[in-house]
Image (cartoon, rainbow, N blue to C red):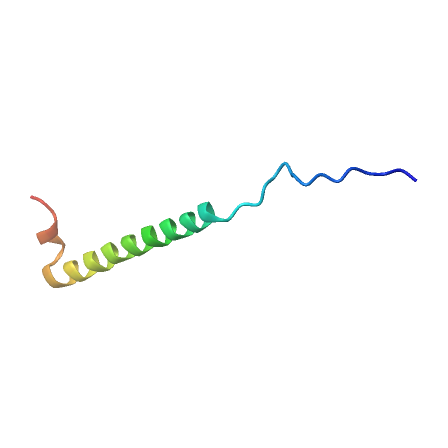
Length: 56
């Protein structure tokens, strides 16, 4: 019978997931910002027309 060495340290330490959470939050905020700008632009064009938005 051979004894095997069991190491308490691993090459891949467990990660707490802060980077993944930050990525999800930043992508969500980016999508929310782009969506709100798109909704604002749509409402602005409906009220004032596209000619008022474009610079002549």
